Image 1 (spheres, rainbow, N blue to C red):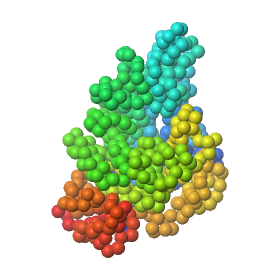
Image 2 (tube, rainbow, N blue to C red):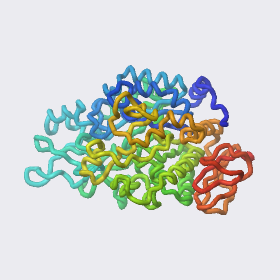
Image 3 (cartoon, one colour):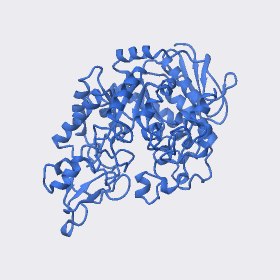
Image 4 (cartoon, rainbow, N blue to C red):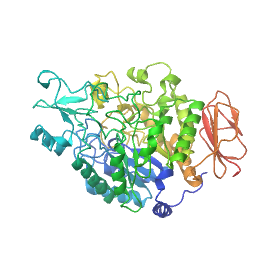
Length: 560
Protein backbone atom coordinates (compact mmCIF):
# COMPACT_ATOMS: atom_id res chain seq x y z
CA UNK A 1 0.00 0.00 0.00
CA UNK A 2 1.29 3.53 -0.71
CA UNK A 3 2.36 5.69 2.16
CA UNK A 4 0.00 8.43 3.29
CA UNK A 5 0.27 11.55 1.13
CA UNK A 6 -0.78 13.83 3.99
CA UNK A 7 -3.96 15.70 4.80
CA UNK A 8 -5.26 18.57 2.66
CA UNK A 9 -4.34 20.97 5.48
CA UNK A 10 -0.70 19.86 5.45
CA UNK A 11 -0.63 20.22 1.68
CA UNK A 12 -2.01 23.76 1.94
CA UNK A 13 0.70 24.71 4.41
CA UNK A 14 3.38 23.15 2.21
CA UNK A 15 2.03 24.98 -0.84
CA UNK A 16 2.13 28.35 0.92
CA UNK A 17 5.67 27.72 2.12
CA UNK A 18 7.05 26.76 -1.30
CA UNK A 19 6.92 29.43 -4.03
CA UNK A 20 8.49 26.89 -6.40
CA UNK A 21 5.65 24.36 -6.03
CA UNK A 22 5.35 24.17 -9.82
CA UNK A 23 8.86 22.84 -10.42
CA UNK A 24 7.89 19.23 -9.65
CA UNK A 25 4.10 19.44 -9.68
CA UNK A 26 1.77 16.81 -11.09
CA UNK A 27 -0.70 18.88 -13.12
CA UNK A 28 -4.04 17.49 -14.36
CA UNK A 29 -5.49 19.08 -17.49
CA UNK A 30 -9.25 19.59 -17.40
CA UNK A 31 -11.00 20.18 -20.72
CA UNK A 32 -14.06 21.77 -19.04
CA UNK A 33 -16.64 21.09 -21.74
CA UNK A 34 -15.89 17.38 -21.52
CA UNK A 35 -15.27 16.85 -17.79
CA UNK A 36 -18.63 16.97 -15.95
CA UNK A 37 -22.01 18.53 -16.83
CA UNK A 38 -24.12 19.89 -13.95
CA UNK A 39 -27.13 21.26 -15.86
CA UNK A 40 -27.97 18.54 -18.43
CA UNK A 41 -27.18 20.67 -21.50
CA UNK A 42 -24.55 18.20 -22.70
CA UNK A 43 -21.65 20.58 -22.04
CA UNK A 44 -19.34 20.30 -19.07
CA UNK A 45 -19.20 23.31 -16.78
CA UNK A 46 -17.53 24.79 -13.71
CA UNK A 47 -20.15 23.52 -11.27
CA UNK A 48 -19.67 20.06 -12.71
CA UNK A 49 -15.96 20.40 -12.04
CA UNK A 50 -16.64 21.64 -8.50
CA UNK A 51 -18.72 18.52 -7.89
CA UNK A 52 -15.70 16.35 -8.78
CA UNK A 53 -13.04 18.00 -6.62
CA UNK A 54 -13.07 14.95 -4.35
CA UNK A 55 -12.10 12.83 -7.35
CA UNK A 56 -9.17 15.13 -8.09
CA UNK A 57 -7.87 15.09 -4.52
CA UNK A 58 -8.12 11.28 -4.48
CA UNK A 59 -5.96 11.26 -7.61
CA UNK A 60 -3.15 12.99 -5.65
CA UNK A 61 -2.37 15.64 -8.26
CA UNK A 62 -0.98 19.02 -7.22
CA UNK A 63 -2.67 21.39 -9.66
CA UNK A 64 -5.46 21.69 -12.22
CA UNK A 65 -4.93 23.25 -15.64
CA UNK A 66 -8.23 24.55 -17.04
CA UNK A 67 -8.51 24.68 -20.82
CA UNK A 68 -10.42 27.77 -22.04
CA UNK A 69 -13.76 28.47 -20.39
CA UNK A 70 -14.24 31.97 -21.83
CA UNK A 71 -17.22 33.16 -23.92
CA UNK A 72 -16.70 31.66 -27.36
CA UNK A 73 -18.46 30.58 -30.52
CA UNK A 74 -16.37 27.37 -30.28
CA UNK A 75 -14.91 27.75 -33.74
CA UNK A 76 -11.79 26.13 -32.26
CA UNK A 77 -12.75 24.42 -29.02
CA UNK A 78 -12.91 27.65 -27.00
CA UNK A 79 -9.55 28.97 -28.22
CA UNK A 80 -11.50 31.64 -30.10
CA UNK A 81 -12.04 34.00 -27.16
CA UNK A 82 -14.78 36.65 -27.16
CA UNK A 83 -13.90 38.12 -23.75
CA UNK A 84 -10.70 37.35 -21.84
CA UNK A 85 -12.16 38.39 -18.49
CA UNK A 86 -15.41 36.46 -18.33
CA UNK A 87 -16.83 32.93 -18.28
CA UNK A 88 -18.95 31.40 -21.04
CA UNK A 89 -22.51 31.36 -19.68
CA UNK A 90 -22.86 27.76 -20.80
CA UNK A 91 -20.03 26.92 -18.40
CA UNK A 92 -20.87 29.21 -15.50
CA UNK A 93 -20.09 32.65 -14.12
CA UNK A 94 -17.21 34.55 -12.60
CA UNK A 95 -18.67 33.69 -9.19
CA UNK A 96 -18.45 30.01 -10.16
CA UNK A 97 -14.79 30.45 -11.06
CA UNK A 98 -14.07 32.20 -7.76
CA UNK A 99 -15.83 29.38 -5.91
CA UNK A 100 -13.89 26.78 -7.88
CA UNK A 101 -10.58 28.45 -7.06
CA UNK A 102 -11.47 28.71 -3.35
CA UNK A 103 -12.52 25.10 -3.11
CA UNK A 104 -9.52 23.80 -5.04
CA UNK A 105 -7.22 25.80 -2.79
CA UNK A 106 -9.02 24.45 0.28
CA UNK A 107 -8.31 20.96 -1.06
CA UNK A 108 -4.63 21.80 -1.51
CA UNK A 109 -4.76 22.14 -5.29
CA UNK A 110 -3.36 24.97 -7.42
CA UNK A 111 -5.23 26.49 -10.38
CA UNK A 112 -3.63 27.10 -13.79
CA UNK A 113 -5.69 29.10 -16.31
CA UNK A 114 -5.29 28.75 -20.09
CA UNK A 115 -4.65 32.14 -21.70
CA UNK A 116 -4.84 32.70 -25.47
CA UNK A 117 -2.78 35.77 -26.41
CA UNK A 118 -1.92 35.14 -30.08
CA UNK A 119 -5.45 35.77 -31.31
CA UNK A 120 -8.91 36.77 -30.12
CA UNK A 121 -12.17 35.66 -31.69
CA UNK A 122 -13.77 37.60 -34.50
CA UNK A 123 -16.63 38.36 -32.09
CA UNK A 124 -14.32 40.18 -29.65
CA UNK A 125 -15.34 43.83 -29.21
CA UNK A 126 -11.96 44.95 -30.53
CA UNK A 127 -12.39 43.09 -33.80
CA UNK A 128 -15.93 44.31 -34.42
CA UNK A 129 -14.63 47.84 -33.75
CA UNK A 130 -11.78 47.23 -36.22
CA UNK A 131 -14.20 46.24 -38.96
CA UNK A 132 -16.36 49.29 -38.30
CA UNK A 133 -13.46 51.76 -38.08
CA UNK A 134 -11.88 51.11 -41.46
CA UNK A 135 -8.41 51.33 -42.97
CA UNK A 136 -5.60 52.92 -41.02
CA UNK A 137 -7.62 53.35 -37.83
CA UNK A 138 -6.27 52.82 -34.30
CA UNK A 139 -8.90 50.09 -33.88
CA UNK A 140 -7.47 48.15 -36.82
CA UNK A 141 -3.95 48.51 -35.48
CA UNK A 142 -4.81 46.11 -32.65
CA UNK A 143 -4.87 43.37 -35.32
CA UNK A 144 -2.80 42.67 -38.43
CA UNK A 145 -4.55 44.16 -41.46
CA UNK A 146 -2.84 44.53 -44.83
CA UNK A 147 -3.80 45.53 -48.36
CA UNK A 148 -3.95 42.71 -50.87
CA UNK A 149 -1.81 42.01 -53.92
CA UNK A 150 -2.74 42.18 -57.57
CA UNK A 151 -5.34 44.26 -59.34
CA UNK A 152 -7.54 46.00 -56.76
CA UNK A 153 -5.85 44.08 -53.95
CA UNK A 154 -7.96 41.04 -54.79
CA UNK A 155 -5.25 38.54 -53.82
CA UNK A 156 -4.13 37.92 -50.23
CA UNK A 157 -0.95 39.68 -49.06
CA UNK A 158 0.96 36.38 -49.06
CA UNK A 159 0.59 32.69 -49.82
CA UNK A 160 0.77 31.75 -46.16
CA UNK A 161 -1.38 28.87 -44.95
CA UNK A 162 -3.05 28.63 -41.57
CA UNK A 163 -2.08 25.95 -39.09
CA UNK A 164 -5.53 24.35 -39.37
CA UNK A 165 -5.63 24.39 -43.16
CA UNK A 166 -6.58 26.92 -45.81
CA UNK A 167 -5.29 30.46 -46.37
CA UNK A 168 -4.00 32.50 -43.42
CA UNK A 169 -5.67 35.69 -44.71
CA UNK A 170 -9.34 36.64 -44.95
CA UNK A 171 -10.67 39.66 -46.82
CA UNK A 172 -13.10 42.11 -45.21
CA UNK A 173 -15.78 44.14 -47.06
CA UNK A 174 -13.60 47.23 -47.62
CA UNK A 175 -10.99 45.09 -49.39
CA UNK A 176 -8.30 44.76 -46.74
CA UNK A 177 -7.14 41.40 -45.42
CA UNK A 178 -6.49 40.27 -41.85
CA UNK A 179 -4.03 37.62 -40.70
CA UNK A 180 -5.21 34.51 -38.84
CA UNK A 181 -2.68 31.75 -38.28
CA UNK A 182 -5.57 29.54 -37.20
CA UNK A 183 -9.23 29.80 -38.27
CA UNK A 184 -10.76 32.97 -39.81
CA UNK A 185 -12.68 33.25 -36.53
CA UNK A 186 -9.33 33.76 -34.74
CA UNK A 187 -7.74 37.01 -36.00
CA UNK A 188 -4.15 37.48 -34.84
CA UNK A 189 -3.49 40.34 -32.44
CA UNK A 190 -0.79 42.94 -33.12
CA UNK A 191 1.63 42.69 -30.21
CA UNK A 192 3.55 45.80 -31.27
CA UNK A 193 0.45 47.73 -30.17
CA UNK A 194 0.83 49.08 -26.63
CA UNK A 195 -2.88 48.82 -25.92
CA UNK A 196 -2.81 45.08 -26.66
CA UNK A 197 0.11 44.61 -24.28
CA UNK A 198 -1.46 46.63 -21.50
CA UNK A 199 -4.81 44.90 -21.79
CA UNK A 200 -3.24 41.48 -21.35
CA UNK A 201 -1.36 42.68 -18.27
CA UNK A 202 -4.77 43.66 -16.93
CA UNK A 203 -6.10 40.18 -17.79
CA UNK A 204 -3.22 38.47 -15.96
CA UNK A 205 -3.97 40.50 -12.84
CA UNK A 206 -7.71 39.86 -13.19
CA UNK A 207 -7.42 36.07 -13.02
CA UNK A 208 -4.60 36.17 -10.48
CA UNK A 209 -6.80 38.26 -8.20
CA UNK A 210 -9.61 35.71 -8.63
CA UNK A 211 -7.35 32.86 -7.52
CA UNK A 212 -5.29 31.70 -10.50
CA UNK A 213 -1.88 30.44 -9.40
CA UNK A 214 -0.46 30.28 -12.90
CA UNK A 215 -1.14 30.33 -16.62
CA UNK A 216 -0.71 27.99 -19.58
CA UNK A 217 0.17 30.22 -22.53
CA UNK A 218 -1.32 29.09 -25.83
CA UNK A 219 0.86 29.52 -28.96
CA UNK A 220 3.47 31.27 -26.80
CA UNK A 221 5.97 31.35 -29.68
CA UNK A 222 3.63 33.19 -32.06
CA UNK A 223 3.02 36.64 -30.57
CA UNK A 224 5.95 38.57 -32.06
CA UNK A 225 5.82 38.89 -35.85
CA UNK A 226 7.80 40.74 -38.50
CA UNK A 227 5.81 41.49 -41.63
CA UNK A 228 8.24 44.10 -42.98
CA UNK A 229 10.04 41.67 -45.29
CA UNK A 230 8.76 39.71 -48.31
CA UNK A 231 5.74 37.65 -47.27
CA UNK A 232 6.45 34.42 -49.10
CA UNK A 233 6.53 30.79 -48.04
CA UNK A 234 4.13 28.78 -45.94
CA UNK A 235 3.35 30.63 -42.74
CA UNK A 236 1.69 27.72 -41.02
CA UNK A 237 4.94 25.80 -40.80
CA UNK A 238 8.36 26.53 -39.33
CA UNK A 239 11.07 27.00 -41.93
CA UNK A 240 13.88 24.74 -40.75
CA UNK A 241 16.37 26.65 -42.90
CA UNK A 242 15.65 29.99 -41.25
CA UNK A 243 18.21 31.08 -38.63
CA UNK A 244 16.90 30.81 -35.05
CA UNK A 245 14.70 33.75 -34.16
CA UNK A 246 14.36 34.99 -37.75
CA UNK A 247 11.11 33.41 -38.93
CA UNK A 248 8.59 36.19 -39.66
CA UNK A 249 5.84 34.55 -37.59
CA UNK A 250 7.23 32.07 -35.09
CA UNK A 251 9.67 32.09 -32.16
CA UNK A 252 11.12 35.54 -32.72
CA UNK A 253 13.56 36.83 -30.11
CA UNK A 254 11.47 39.90 -29.34
CA UNK A 255 8.64 37.75 -27.99
CA UNK A 256 10.64 37.56 -24.76
CA UNK A 257 10.24 41.31 -24.26
CA UNK A 258 6.53 40.59 -23.88
CA UNK A 259 7.08 37.85 -21.32
CA UNK A 260 9.51 39.99 -19.33
CA UNK A 261 6.58 42.38 -18.76
CA UNK A 262 4.38 39.45 -17.77
CA UNK A 263 7.01 38.32 -15.27
CA UNK A 264 6.87 41.73 -13.59
CA UNK A 265 3.13 41.19 -13.07
CA UNK A 266 3.63 37.62 -11.80
CA UNK A 267 6.15 38.88 -9.26
CA UNK A 268 3.65 41.35 -7.82
CA UNK A 269 2.05 38.35 -6.07
CA UNK A 270 3.17 36.29 -3.10
CA UNK A 271 3.91 33.61 -4.04
CA UNK A 272 4.71 34.76 -7.57
CA UNK A 273 2.40 33.51 -10.28
CA UNK A 274 3.95 31.14 -12.77
CA UNK A 275 3.32 30.11 -16.35
CA UNK A 276 4.15 27.39 -18.83
CA UNK A 277 4.65 28.13 -22.52
CA UNK A 278 3.09 26.05 -25.26
CA UNK A 279 5.95 26.71 -27.64
CA UNK A 280 6.63 24.24 -30.42
CA UNK A 281 10.26 25.27 -30.83
CA UNK A 282 13.63 23.57 -31.03
CA UNK A 283 14.98 22.33 -27.72
CA UNK A 284 17.75 24.93 -27.76
CA UNK A 285 15.12 27.70 -27.95
CA UNK A 286 13.02 26.54 -24.97
CA UNK A 287 15.15 27.89 -22.12
CA UNK A 288 14.31 31.55 -22.75
CA UNK A 289 10.59 30.79 -22.43
CA UNK A 290 11.30 28.84 -19.24
CA UNK A 291 13.61 31.40 -17.64
CA UNK A 292 12.88 33.06 -14.31
CA UNK A 293 12.80 36.37 -16.17
CA UNK A 294 10.13 34.96 -18.46
CA UNK A 295 7.31 32.49 -18.02
CA UNK A 296 9.09 29.99 -15.76
CA UNK A 297 8.41 26.80 -17.71
CA UNK A 298 7.97 25.64 -21.29
CA UNK A 299 6.32 22.45 -22.42
CA UNK A 300 8.73 19.74 -23.47
CA UNK A 301 6.85 17.65 -26.04
CA UNK A 302 9.76 15.33 -26.80
CA UNK A 303 8.39 12.27 -25.00
CA UNK A 304 4.98 12.88 -26.54
CA UNK A 305 6.56 12.83 -29.98
CA UNK A 306 8.65 9.72 -29.32
CA UNK A 307 7.69 6.16 -30.13
CA UNK A 308 7.95 3.23 -27.72
CA UNK A 309 11.72 3.04 -27.96
CA UNK A 310 14.25 2.84 -25.13
CA UNK A 311 16.98 4.76 -26.96
CA UNK A 312 14.63 7.64 -27.75
CA UNK A 313 13.39 7.86 -24.17
CA UNK A 314 16.91 7.72 -22.71
CA UNK A 315 18.23 10.44 -25.03
CA UNK A 316 15.23 12.70 -24.45
CA UNK A 317 15.53 12.42 -20.67
CA UNK A 318 19.28 13.01 -20.71
CA UNK A 319 19.14 16.00 -23.05
CA UNK A 320 16.26 17.76 -21.35
CA UNK A 321 17.62 17.37 -17.84
CA UNK A 322 20.99 18.66 -19.04
CA UNK A 323 19.28 21.74 -20.48
CA UNK A 324 17.35 22.26 -17.25
CA UNK A 325 20.54 22.12 -15.18
CA UNK A 326 22.36 24.47 -17.54
CA UNK A 327 19.65 27.13 -17.41
CA UNK A 328 18.29 26.59 -13.89
CA UNK A 329 14.84 25.79 -15.27
CA UNK A 330 12.39 23.04 -14.46
CA UNK A 331 11.58 20.68 -17.30
CA UNK A 332 8.10 19.38 -18.07
CA UNK A 333 6.91 15.96 -19.23
CA UNK A 334 3.72 15.16 -21.11
CA UNK A 335 2.41 12.12 -22.98
CA UNK A 336 -1.14 13.22 -23.91
CA UNK A 337 -3.17 16.40 -24.16
CA UNK A 338 -6.23 17.81 -25.94
CA UNK A 339 -4.39 18.18 -29.27
CA UNK A 340 -2.96 14.70 -29.88
CA UNK A 341 -3.97 11.06 -30.14
CA UNK A 342 -4.07 9.51 -26.65
CA UNK A 343 -0.90 7.63 -25.80
CA UNK A 344 -2.75 4.42 -24.92
CA UNK A 345 -3.68 4.31 -28.61
CA UNK A 346 -0.36 5.53 -30.02
CA UNK A 347 1.65 2.84 -28.24
CA UNK A 348 -0.56 0.13 -29.68
CA UNK A 349 0.23 1.17 -33.24
CA UNK A 350 3.29 0.11 -35.25
CA UNK A 351 6.35 2.13 -34.21
CA UNK A 352 6.36 4.30 -37.34
CA UNK A 353 2.85 5.59 -36.50
CA UNK A 354 3.47 6.45 -32.84
CA UNK A 355 4.80 10.03 -33.10
CA UNK A 356 2.47 12.18 -31.01
CA UNK A 357 1.58 15.12 -33.21
CA UNK A 358 0.82 13.01 -36.29
CA UNK A 359 0.11 9.69 -34.60
CA UNK A 360 -2.08 7.17 -36.31
CA UNK A 361 -3.48 9.45 -39.02
CA UNK A 362 -4.11 6.52 -41.33
CA UNK A 363 -5.71 4.60 -38.50
CA UNK A 364 -7.92 7.55 -37.54
CA UNK A 365 -8.87 8.22 -41.14
CA UNK A 366 -10.01 4.63 -41.50
CA UNK A 367 -12.30 4.99 -38.49
CA UNK A 368 -10.03 2.75 -36.45
CA UNK A 369 -10.17 -0.13 -38.91
CA UNK A 370 -6.53 -0.08 -40.04
CA UNK A 371 -4.79 -3.36 -39.12
CA UNK A 372 -1.99 -3.16 -36.62
CA UNK A 373 -3.58 -1.55 -33.57
CA UNK A 374 -3.24 -3.63 -30.41
CA UNK A 375 -5.35 -2.01 -27.66
CA UNK A 376 -4.06 -4.28 -24.90
CA UNK A 377 -0.42 -3.71 -25.82
CA UNK A 378 -1.01 0.04 -26.11
CA UNK A 379 -2.50 0.20 -22.63
CA UNK A 380 0.35 -1.87 -21.11
CA UNK A 381 2.89 0.47 -22.64
CA UNK A 382 0.89 3.53 -21.61
CA UNK A 383 0.94 2.34 -17.99
CA UNK A 384 4.69 1.78 -18.19
CA UNK A 385 5.39 5.12 -19.88
CA UNK A 386 3.27 7.03 -17.37
CA UNK A 387 5.09 5.49 -14.42
CA UNK A 388 8.43 6.30 -16.05
CA UNK A 389 7.30 9.90 -16.60
CA UNK A 390 6.05 10.30 -13.03
CA UNK A 391 9.42 9.15 -11.70
CA UNK A 392 11.33 11.91 -13.53
CA UNK A 393 12.44 15.22 -12.01
CA UNK A 394 10.33 18.16 -13.16
CA UNK A 395 6.62 18.69 -13.70
CA UNK A 396 4.33 15.98 -15.07
CA UNK A 397 1.26 17.04 -17.05
CA UNK A 398 -1.62 14.57 -17.27
CA UNK A 399 -4.66 14.82 -19.54
CA UNK A 400 -8.14 13.98 -18.29
CA UNK A 401 -9.18 10.44 -19.11
CA UNK A 402 -5.70 8.98 -19.37
CA UNK A 403 -6.06 7.86 -15.75
CA UNK A 404 -8.96 5.71 -16.98
CA UNK A 405 -6.91 4.19 -19.79
CA UNK A 406 -9.14 5.78 -22.43
CA UNK A 407 -8.21 5.17 -26.03
CA UNK A 408 -8.85 7.54 -28.89
CA UNK A 409 -12.45 7.52 -30.13
CA UNK A 410 -11.90 7.01 -33.84
CA UNK A 411 -15.36 6.38 -35.20
CA UNK A 412 -17.13 9.67 -34.44
CA UNK A 413 -19.73 10.45 -37.14
CA UNK A 414 -18.83 13.32 -39.43
CA UNK A 415 -21.86 15.38 -38.41
CA UNK A 416 -20.79 15.21 -34.75
CA UNK A 417 -17.22 16.40 -35.26
CA UNK A 418 -16.39 19.92 -34.11
CA UNK A 419 -12.67 20.39 -34.76
CA UNK A 420 -11.88 23.01 -37.43
CA UNK A 421 -9.01 20.79 -38.58
CA UNK A 422 -11.65 18.28 -39.75
CA UNK A 423 -14.04 20.91 -41.09
CA UNK A 424 -11.43 22.96 -43.01
CA UNK A 425 -9.86 19.87 -44.58
CA UNK A 426 -13.24 18.50 -45.72
CA UNK A 427 -12.59 15.44 -43.59
CA UNK A 428 -9.14 14.69 -44.98
CA UNK A 429 -7.79 15.20 -41.46
CA UNK A 430 -10.01 13.71 -38.75
CA UNK A 431 -8.84 16.28 -36.23
CA UNK A 432 -8.73 16.18 -32.44
CA UNK A 433 -12.29 15.39 -31.36
CA UNK A 434 -11.37 11.78 -30.60
CA UNK A 435 -9.42 12.75 -27.48
CA UNK A 436 -12.02 15.33 -26.36
CA UNK A 437 -15.01 13.01 -25.89
CA UNK A 438 -16.63 13.57 -22.45
CA UNK A 439 -15.50 11.36 -19.59
CA UNK A 440 -17.45 8.30 -18.38
CA UNK A 441 -18.20 8.49 -14.66
CA UNK A 442 -20.67 5.61 -14.41
CA UNK A 443 -21.12 2.34 -16.30
CA UNK A 444 -24.50 3.34 -17.74
CA UNK A 445 -26.82 6.27 -18.27
CA UNK A 446 -27.42 8.64 -21.19
CA UNK A 447 -23.83 9.96 -20.99
CA UNK A 448 -22.17 7.49 -18.59
CA UNK A 449 -22.62 9.89 -15.67
CA UNK A 450 -21.12 12.90 -17.46
CA UNK A 451 -24.54 14.55 -17.17
CA UNK A 452 -28.25 13.83 -17.14
CA UNK A 453 -28.54 13.97 -20.93
CA UNK A 454 -26.50 13.15 -24.04
CA UNK A 455 -22.99 14.58 -24.21
CA UNK A 456 -21.90 17.14 -26.80
CA UNK A 457 -19.68 14.49 -28.45
CA UNK A 458 -21.08 10.94 -28.64
CA UNK A 459 -19.44 8.42 -26.31
CA UNK A 460 -18.83 4.83 -27.47
CA UNK A 461 -20.36 1.87 -25.66
CA UNK A 462 -16.95 0.63 -24.54
CA UNK A 463 -16.68 3.65 -22.22
CA UNK A 464 -18.92 1.92 -19.64
CA UNK A 465 -16.42 -0.65 -18.33
CA UNK A 466 -13.75 2.09 -18.23
CA UNK A 467 -15.88 4.45 -16.13
CA UNK A 468 -14.71 5.87 -12.82
CA UNK A 469 -17.35 3.89 -10.92
CA UNK A 470 -16.18 0.60 -12.41
CA UNK A 471 -12.48 1.30 -11.93
CA UNK A 472 -12.72 2.56 -8.36
CA UNK A 473 -13.86 -0.89 -7.33
CA UNK A 474 -10.96 -2.63 -9.10
CA UNK A 475 -7.54 -2.52 -7.40
CA UNK A 476 -5.90 -3.57 -10.69
CA UNK A 477 -7.51 -0.82 -12.79
CA UNK A 478 -5.73 2.00 -14.58
CA UNK A 479 -7.31 4.48 -12.16
CA UNK A 480 -6.00 2.57 -9.15
CA UNK A 481 -2.52 2.49 -10.71
CA UNK A 482 -2.53 6.27 -11.26
CA UNK A 483 -3.70 6.93 -7.72
CA UNK A 484 -0.99 4.75 -6.23
CA UNK A 485 1.72 6.14 -8.51
CA UNK A 486 0.83 9.76 -7.81
CA UNK A 487 0.62 9.12 -4.06
CA UNK A 488 4.04 7.47 -4.06
CA UNK A 489 5.44 10.27 -6.22
CA UNK A 490 4.42 12.85 -3.65
CA UNK A 491 5.79 10.74 -0.80
CA UNK A 492 9.13 10.11 -2.54
CA UNK A 493 9.56 13.60 -3.99
CA UNK A 494 13.29 14.24 -4.18
CA UNK A 495 15.80 16.77 -5.43
CA UNK A 496 15.60 17.60 -9.15
CA UNK A 497 18.24 15.12 -10.25
CA UNK A 498 18.81 11.51 -11.17
CA UNK A 499 21.66 9.19 -12.04
CA UNK A 500 22.00 6.26 -14.37
CA UNK A 501 23.16 3.01 -12.75
CA UNK A 502 25.22 0.71 -14.96
CA UNK A 503 22.89 -1.18 -17.29
CA UNK A 504 24.14 -3.25 -20.20
CA UNK A 505 20.70 -3.91 -21.70
CA UNK A 506 19.87 -1.29 -24.38
CA UNK A 507 16.16 -2.17 -24.06
CA UNK A 508 16.01 -1.06 -20.41
CA UNK A 509 15.66 2.50 -19.11
CA UNK A 510 16.86 2.45 -15.48
CA UNK A 511 17.50 5.58 -13.43
CA UNK A 512 17.74 6.35 -9.73
CA UNK A 513 16.40 9.36 -7.83
CA UNK A 514 17.84 10.66 -4.53
CA UNK A 515 16.90 8.45 -1.60
CA UNK A 516 17.41 5.22 -3.51
CA UNK A 517 14.22 5.35 -5.60
CA UNK A 518 14.80 3.30 -8.77
CA UNK A 519 12.60 3.43 -11.86
CA UNK A 520 13.10 0.52 -14.28
CA UNK A 521 11.28 0.26 -17.61
CA UNK A 522 11.52 -2.82 -19.83
CA UNK A 523 11.13 -1.89 -23.50
CA UNK A 524 12.35 -5.29 -24.67
CA UNK A 525 10.70 -8.54 -25.69
CA UNK A 526 11.79 -10.65 -22.72
CA UNK A 527 11.70 -10.42 -18.90
CA UNK A 528 14.49 -8.73 -16.94
CA UNK A 529 15.71 -8.91 -13.35
CA UNK A 530 14.97 -5.95 -11.08
CA UNK A 531 17.66 -4.30 -8.93
CA UNK A 532 17.88 -5.22 -5.22
CA UNK A 533 15.32 -3.59 -2.96
CA UNK A 534 11.60 -3.48 -2.28
CA UNK A 535 9.28 -3.18 -5.28
CA UNK A 536 6.70 -0.62 -4.18
CA UNK A 537 4.76 -0.38 -7.45
CA UNK A 538 4.70 -2.01 -10.87
CA UNK A 539 2.65 -1.16 -13.96
CA UNK A 540 1.72 -4.82 -14.34
CA UNK A 541 1.87 -7.82 -12.06
CA UNK A 542 5.52 -8.87 -11.77
CA UNK A 543 6.48 -12.27 -10.38
CA UNK A 544 9.25 -12.04 -7.78
CA UNK A 545 12.27 -10.02 -8.96
CA UNK A 546 11.32 -10.28 -12.62
CA UNK A 547 9.86 -7.44 -14.71
CA UNK A 548 7.91 -8.51 -17.82
CA UNK A 549 8.20 -6.71 -21.18
CA UNK A 550 6.41 -3.37 -21.66
CA UNK A 551 6.37 -2.62 -17.94
CA UNK A 552 7.82 -0.27 -15.33
CA UNK A 553 8.60 -0.94 -11.68
CA UNK A 554 9.63 1.36 -8.85
CA UNK A 555 12.10 -0.14 -6.40
CA UNK A 556 13.23 1.30 -3.08
CA UNK A 557 16.85 0.29 -2.71
CA UNK A 558 19.82 1.86 -1.00
CA UNK A 559 20.14 5.64 -0.78
CA UNK A 560 23.58 5.83 -2.36
